[in-house]
Image (cartoon, rainbow, N blue to C red):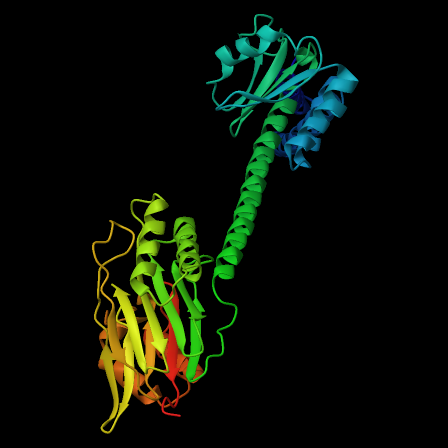
Length: 463
C-alpha cells in the first residue's frame, strides 16, 4: 500500500468514526431528553467531532508519514537528498553517491550531461558498467522532460515504482540514473524531494561555474591589461627644453588608445599617439604591435618609413576590420621645428603664444587610415616650433565626447577658450585642465570611449 492510499484510508476512517458518533446523538431523545436540548447537544457534538476528526486525522497522517519515511529504503533516498542539498560541485555529488547509494545499498549510478550525453560519473558496478546500458538509456530518455520517472528491466519507461529496476531524475540539463531493486519499497515522496533538491543543486553548480568563469575571465583580462600597459611608458622621459605630460584612462580594462615618447638624441624627441579601431583583445594586440614597431625602428627620424612599417604590421595581423589613426611627430628643439605625419588623427592642436594672445590652430590630416590597404604615399609635413608653444594630441574620446545637448567638446568655442587660458601653465597642469574640462562637460553622464591626452610644451628655444 502506498502512502497516498494509507492517508486516504486514515482520513476516511476518522470521518466515518465522527459520523457514527454524531448519529448516536438522536438516541438521547429516546432517553427522555427534551428535543431542543437534544438538538443543542447534537450541534455541540458535531462541532467537537469535527475538530477531533480533523486533528486526529492530521496526527494519524503525520504518524503514518514518519513511519513510512523511516523505512530503511526510503531513508536511503531522503538522506541522499539531504546530502545533495549541502553539495556545491560535481565531486560533492559523486562523493554523496558513493557514500549513500553505492556502499550501503549497492546501487549503481550514472550521471550524464543531457545535451552532449557526456558521462560525468558511472558507478563501477557490473550493471552500470554494461556497455549497452548507456546507449539504451540515451535512446529512451535523452529527450525526456524534466522530473523523475522509473525504468524497467527492458530499460524503457515503467508505469510506477512497483516493478521498476531503477529511477532517473532529469533536472537543469543533467540526467542522474540510479539502478536499484529497492524502488518498490521507497516512498514516492522521497523521489519528489530528491528531484527538488537536485534542481536546486544543479542551479547552484551552474551559478558557481559561471561565477568562476567570470572571475577567470576577469583575471585573464586583467593580465591582458597589465601586458598592454607594459607597452606604454611607465613614466615620460625628461627631455631638455620640452615639458611633457600625459593622461590615460581606458574605458574598460584594455584600450585601443596608445601613446609613447621616445628620445632620439639630445635635441630630437619622437611623439606617438593613436587609436586602434574597435575594442577588446584584437585592438589591444594591435596597439602593442604598433608601439613595438615604432620603438624598434632603426631610423626614428624617417617618419614615412615608420608609418609604412606600422601599416604592414597591422595588415599582417590579418584582421579585416582593424586599422589605426595615428600622429607621429619628431620634435627638434635645436632646429626649432616639428616634422609630423597625421594619419586621420582627431585634430592635433597647437597652442601658440602671440602678441595678440594665445592662438589655437588645428593640424589637418596628411594621409588616411593606416592598416587597411597598402600605402601609396606618406606625406610628411613640417612646422616651426616656438618657445612656450604646446602640441596637444588627444584621442577622439576627448574631442568627440558630447554633452546632454549633443554638442561635441572639440567643436565648441568653450574648448578653444579653455586651451588658450591654460596655455600659460606647465604641461602637467595643462593636461589636468583639459581633463577637468572633459569631466565638467559630460557632467554626470558616463564616458563612452578611451581617453588619452598627451601634451608637449616647448621651453626657451633660444637659450
